[in-house]
Amino acid sequence: MKLLILILLFSVILCSCASAKEDNLKYSGILAASEFTPGENRVPFGLVSMNGDFLENADVTVKIAKLEDQGWKVTEEKKPQWHVIKGITPHKHPDGEVHLHLDFQGIYILKDVYFDSAGVWSLNFSIADGTPTEEAVFRVKETGSAPKVGEAVIPTRNLTISQVDNFNEISSRAVLQDGMHDYSVADALELNEPFVVFFASPQFCITALCGPVTDTLEAAKIALDDRVIFIHIEPWDLTVARNEGKLVKSRAMEQWRLPSEPWTFIVDHQGVITERFEGIVTENEILDSVNRLLDSNTNKTSN
Image (spheres, rainbow, N blue to C red):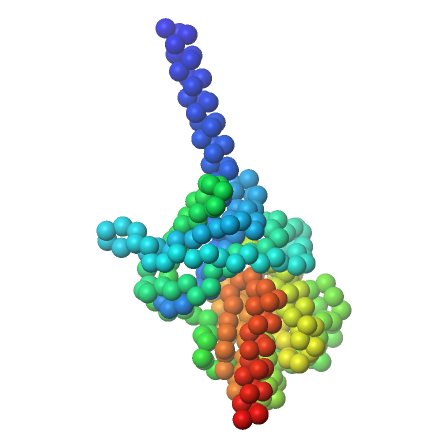
């Protein structure tokens, strides 16, 4: 009898270990954005196991579903694009620890995901080779708080390099200058030219997927041969973050009603937001958006 009990107990332990191992091998979806509203949305995400391993550049199919009274209803099925993120940059938290959050080299992006109503939604991931996954469940809000496409940009008078003694007063980036703090948003509006404004913190990123957004935007600026103004604004009060170890929203971030960071906005020559990106953004996304805007302006001028 004792032998039978020991055998049963050993079997339970083996099953538990196998189950735990299987759970560790599952890849869960981590959303790199949080503000979703009815209509078309851009959905960036990563797939990570409980061990912290990322599933990169996989053949993924995503079923988008909403929770109804009768249960989950699939509304569409899409394949995301995989984008390599260049220049993963270490950053420091208020406690002084320097790390990369989760060690990933790219991001999956679903474009034009249509949510027909507010409520609870999910992404169900299917990998071509059968790798096990777990869905991501999230909420679509009735309305968002961040400035929307089609709205006039907020004429923020953020501090520029000419108004401070040291670059580190306006940027947590470990460089002496980067050419993205020469204008305030209000200054750029007076020029009647397209520009890019983004909120990101190289040193004090707190999102689950921290990417080198500032590096990415600088690369896009260089690729565009400085034809467009780029404006970087820190989302946090740097003095408080450095001296008190707390993350308090900067005046500009409060003004823009941003619920998270990073955010990037493409603005046309009339000061209207033409595209916006929450979370990690790729160089190609920025270049495509800006070049479309520049081409549109050229066509209007020639006509």
